[in-house]
Amino acid sequence: MNLGETLLVLGALVIFSMAALYLNDSKFDNDMTLMETEFRTTAIGIAQSFIEEAQSLKFDEILDDSTYTAGLPDNFTDIASLGPDAGESYLNFDDVDDFNGYSANINTPRANYDVDIIVSYADSVNVNPGYLNKSFLKIMAVKITSIFFSDSIKLDYLYSYR
Image (cartoon, rainbow, N blue to C red):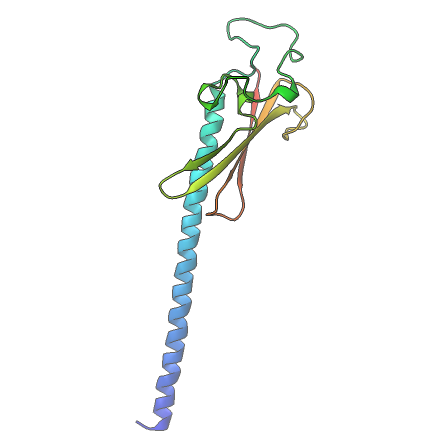
């Protein structure tokens, strides 16, 4: 083998090595994307489960499904009192706003997730959390964070009185 052939073989080896590194890096990036997608999908499912759980509860503490309460929405829970009542905990919430201020760490077999929930009143124009007047609408903002994805997942759901 002469010098020219040796240089061609070495050049081919360098090109092959660079291609192998590129393919390996590409596969690693693809695997990371797939894993992050799985973690995000699980986070969305966790947020959705809190939203669905709140859907099964009363709109407000003062309401009884069998009676109509006059003076609404003025008689709804005060804005400063949104959240669980004395003696209430997550397992016995009875109305939507009991979730206000709720935080939890959810551990799954593959990842851990931090859940933070805010519930506030809303109106048809201002459907963002933090509306400062009582109304026939409440918005629940469920925020999920994890070390397995860089930003957070946030789902908002608007609850309406009847």
